[in-house]
Amino acid sequence: MAQIEQSSGGKKKKGAQKKMAIHVDFTPMVDMNMLLITFFMLCTTMIKSQTLSIALPTNEKLEQTELQKAKESEAITLILDTDYDDNGNVKGNTVYYYAGKPEMELNGNEVVSSNLEVTEFLGNDGATQQGIRKILHDRNKDVLAEVEKKKQEWRDKKITEEQFQEAAKKIRNSDQYTRPVVIIKPMAGASWESVISALDEMQINQISRYQLGTLTDVDEAMVGDYKIKHAKK
Amino acid sequence: MGKVKIKRKSTLIDMTAMSDVTVLLLTFFMLTSTFLQKEPVTVITPSSVSEIKVPTSNVAQVLVSPQGNVFMSVLGDADPENAEEWGSEPLRKEVLRTAAADYEKKTGKKLGITPMDLEKFAKNASFGVPLEKMHEFLMLETTKQDEFLGQTADKPVLIGSLRPKDVGIPFKDIVYKDENGTPIATNEFQIWMRAIYNSSNPNIHDAIQKGEGIAVKSDRGTKYETIHQVLDNLQTIKMNKFSVMTALKTESD
Image 1: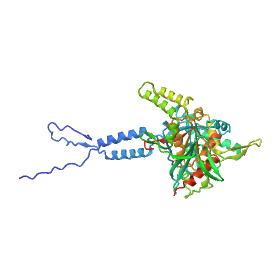
Image 2: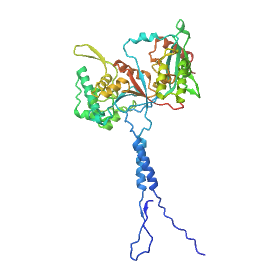
Image 3: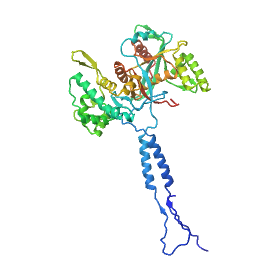
Image 4: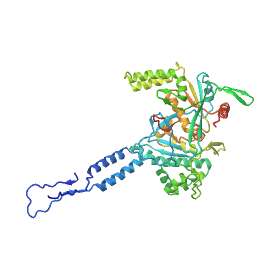
């Protein structure tokens, strides 16, 4: 290995120099390499971060009318809010939602009833959807079923990936199916995480029509009322 | 009975194999590494299922810290053929020149950016001080600059006329008056974004139009109201297509 074998065969001649095995000590080399490895390991990012693309409407107040166009039966509004602990770390994200228009019965200043409901970002439990994902999934099940069919075809190698992506895009934007229009309204205190989670749910549930909106007074009143009634002890 | 002689063995360990392995590992890390960019604040991005990779060239990254400070970093063209003209360093120089000129025109204040400042600015990955303090900031040593940008509320850093409030690019609207006396509301964040968009590098221009050229990065816990102001600014200058930096969602998420 690290020594050079020198032939020791044959007779030893008188006066010949004593032959030594030459050892090269690799320990310092290994030390140095280890240091370099440590340096590179600490300084690198193995996982490149991903991006999520967003398109927002312009600030010109044209799209307000567009916004109203959403059919009541199709619209669903998500209001996002976040709880923080004493150190300012996120404790949990809450999703308030209502379908169609906000409905609220008032008795004086007190809210008697509203169509506001509450859930959370729970993701999947095995193959079943939970929380907000289930609600969105159920509302977009026609599209999801169609996309799943195409996906199966792709898995069976009947169509290529490009064809599948193309078909899925068509299905997502097709008017044949009842598709929801989701309006995401983060509250002032909502965490960035919750906004991204909400946008992510749109991707997961193949929802093509969604927008980020701003809270209205009615929304604020309903959430405020809910919080008072369900104050955590 | 003869004594059993215990043969003394040499304690030399052959390190060749070990050396081989370490060299291999070292090669692997050297080839796969992309260095962490120095950032004024460390943020943990939220996770999503999106699998689009962050572009490494022709991108303007907007970093919003949880305290509500905005930092920016600009990466130019990665093509070595264009490095002279549109690489990161020439691009940054051009952006600072344009932004400073635009600011001087709008406010009538002189910024006094020297060619030395441009050189220093081009070397920095990210920046985040008001244009008015840019010259003073760039005169500082790199360690001082980092110390200033990375300061926290309970440990304020005061250097010269730089105050803790000078951390971050101002993004609240200020009303300027143009030559005809018509008021225009704009802010430094918009000035920077426009300078990047209108640079001589056509690739970053295209990337911004496609929505790949702007990456907004923020911490999980940052409040929406903070980021909303930044997004609002982007909407005002009609850069309403952009991407958001996320981490890959794991199974448990």
